[in-house]
Length: 256
Image (cartoon, rainbow, N blue to C red; front, side, top):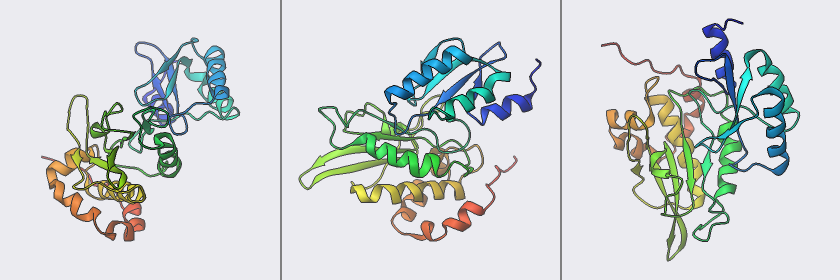
């Protein structure tokens, strides 16, 4: 069948990306808090054999892509996966799949990174699934300063630190890598675990309110000044205006 741009855009929103030079797609399966169960892995393998080429490719965001799914079988593949607890997604201008290191079991890990990632997954990857953002928003949860999961190169990065008072967290804001690389701006102080989720939510609210469409958080911080964000993270004004921020139209980039 001849695919239209509307066809391709429809399934991209569902987590299916076209394989170059073909009319086949890779479907991105997103784990809960970076962890797949044995049953889920078996279901992914069965899905790949039934609907795809038999290949499964892990991504840097810790999802699994089932390669070579024909367009006309995508909806069937989604239903098959849903019946087995699999969820496709991880694309678009929204919260992307959370990544975490294995700090939960690693000898260097200072806290349960996968538990934090799972809570972020539930509250924001799933909870904000229908929230349109100016651009993608990536979150990484690191267990120690070894920085294996690169928290400083994510829009919101969490990194465990050991202090005399116990484990505290360094938060990084506005990191990116790829064609444009920006080291995340360190939050000015280490924070306690109970501060992480309010800081994350306020950061995403600021991003939605201040960034132009197709502008990453770091680019908006550079344009407006990092202090524009940092000053608002210390208070609760963003949270108090949450409903208004989420219901407002996204800002269009001014035309030159």
